[in-house]
Length: 117
Image (cartoon, rainbow, N blue to C red):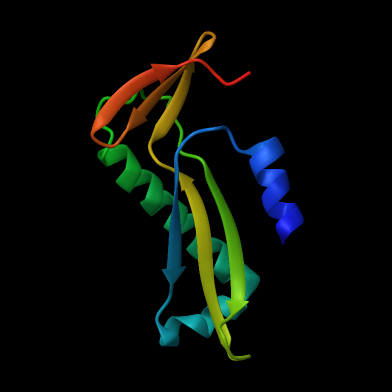
């Protein structure tokens, strides 16, 4: 797990602010999430809801701005009972490129910054 975190920080994720989201599901829904196609559908729904929420909080963002999300799907809780839940790391705002400059629109504020070297 440490290697995965180091890889994400060093090689994958841009240097922007992030927020962690933990998503759990009601017990009666967890039974159906054991099947991969249902878990994938739930993940898509959660990501769409996250992006909608972040975009609504950033009204000045350009239409091509994107939200970045990395998800870890965990299938068990603190005991060995099935307990599918998601740990997501999402950008705190939306981001778009305008030539060489990255335009950043964060909830409640706006800024532009050059990409890190």
